[in-house]
Length: 314
Image 1: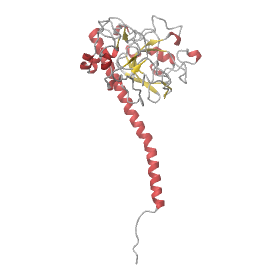
Image 2 (image 1 turned 90 degrees about the vertical axis):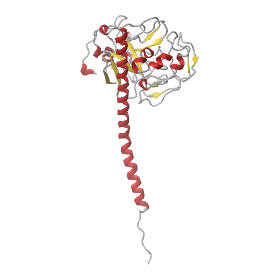
Image 3 (image 1 turned 45 degrees about the vertical axis):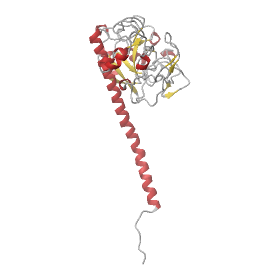
Image 4 (image 1 turned 135 degrees about the horizontal axis):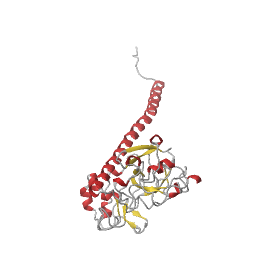
């Protein structure tokens, strides 16, 4: 008599495969959420470390660094074009890298362009999905158009200099529109009149110089600012953008009422779902929902405009 063999039928195998596929489909979103939570936490920690670095600079020089220098100032005795990140390298445990940086030259001159090619994880948010290798740049006077000896290393964090008057022409003017760090600033802790816990110093502005509109990259657009962590021309003031990201700085009445995550060339922008991480002058980092009203977010981006902000609004 022939012996019977035990085994699976084709139908049984197909059913098992289908069940496994369904389980994988259910598991992937959960894995992605865990990864994003970890990335957001790492991003938040980066900003905390940058806050400590900025406070370390303040302890040493009695002022916060300028967002970018074009003249002589604390840490920039030669009066060259230099940004806040090269000035704070010793406070993020990068003393050796700062020694390679020549503060007697502008950031793009001599061997500084080579130093600018050293990637630092503290300046990079792990949530950024794609980047552009930067080996050249169009002119942004006084920096000429140039080719770099090595790819310029990126940064996803930038100083917000303040608020453009178009956000509220009645309230903001040249005397009160600034944040902590702006061009050639010498802001002391006591100069943050609105309160250090209510004033944003550094925002997420991810993936530059690759240009994004509503999380979609547009390689046809060129951005000449924020091309790397050494770039002194990356900081910007808050404009407000339209919901589709096509317009910037047209005023709330004309549809530019979104405070973040619409365009990344000169506005706060992150790849975190629903908002972004922001570093305040007291050193704390907070996730702020992208639905925050533009007026409320603008109030957080000035240090002495006298706005009253309800903590429950952000």
